[in-house]
Length: 220
Image (cartoon, rainbow, N blue to C red; front, side, top):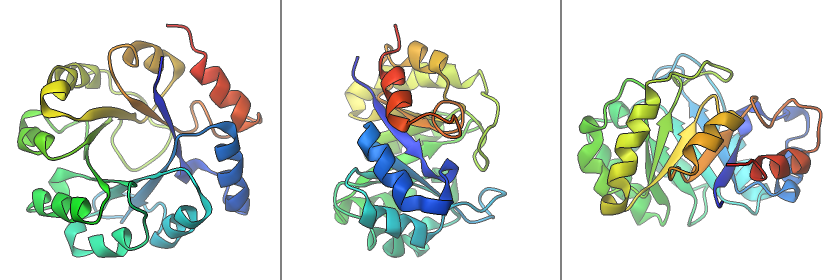
């Protein structure tokens, strides 16, 4: 079964970020997930613009940039100017007065437009944007920190989105508390990719290639 695996780089070892990037690429990671937090939209700070720019320079694989910031349109040019055509940029619709304007800026820059949906955000409130974006990232935890517990009602939201994705032409991605059982359950249903953090990838004391190989060999 073909599904994408993205490394949540906020969980990486920052003592040697270049080695982390190279080891993950050698291990077969599909893309690098970059969490940008401003301490306002979410109650935490995570990766910086410079972290993102460095990984974009060091990596061959695409970047998935997750903007957890207020009013991203005010600063979207800073991020787009440090990315490469084909990279993905997610925004949270709740963070912007006119999210479609920000999404159009992402499209015009040659990036892949995406939205991230918080656990408390209903599908109905983002329905119009589903025809604009190419990726919908469903948060299975409240954003802002790694290592949180899965919120079970998110599964019903994914079921609703799966029923819409063919008609509206978008793919669904999973972010938060991603365990092997979640991949076994939702990959066969049509979820395209999974963001891997401390549950399956980081801090395990094993080579990334071995861990990623085992994930791809999961039995369905």
